[in-house]
Length: 348
Image (tube, rainbow, N blue to C red; front, side, top):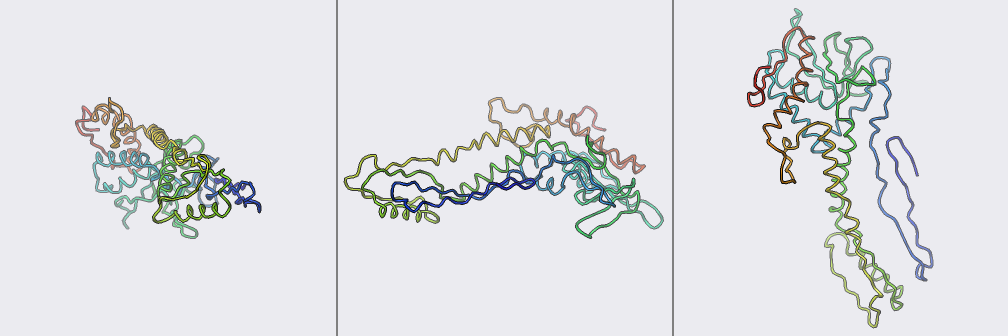
């Protein structure tokens, strides 16, 4: 067994059949490659390490970006919040709808959002520009930020020209962390279950049965012939029919024990449903708003009412967070209008 950080793999050498395999001995073998249990240990962090110029993120942002599309419910819940925020946002000459939408998506995915304030030669503030949160790093001094795309590919922004909106974290105050961290394992479980099923069906030639032979009339030559016939049934043209002629054989000398049903019963539907519920609970999104078809007779209730409660409990607090940009800019750049069907007073 070999252990690596984030990966625990079992390496087993094939079991070679003994030389007297035809003299009543049992030949066995194993198959399959080691599978990683976890790609990254997201929760094994202590602090944001300082490298001399900027602080490193407490988690690998590449992992969060990859997990964004790991589960359809995870990505869809984030896009729903982004779309609602962007739909109710009132564009400003210095903050366009596209810039705000990109900023909102970064905040929901990474727990951090950045915009840069460029200025004209005269010092007049120009339109805000979105800065990718995945590559932005905070320096030691307040108001100092870097844009780091790779090794020796860094750019330092002018001092106090970058606004940083961060989600609160209980372990450090340099970077924010998204709210859904606890549901990432469920999102990956959902992805792993889907990938397993894809591999299972794409393989097409599963070990669907055990052929058990005890008849003394079946010699080694016959067994090798049957083994070759089964082996040649794999690949294109699989699921072929096989014929075996055994005159005078016993009725129970050749048994076929199906195991494909057992191998395929991996609780796929239960895993998908449980992981879906975990992800939706982490995002606090009503399932009816994500296009999920109800399986119970009662359904998910009235969709407009669910939308109104969701906007009141989740979207309005997010709006308040984005209004923090107004205080930094010294001007009301962020303003929202809620449709009348979801609030008594449409202006917020």
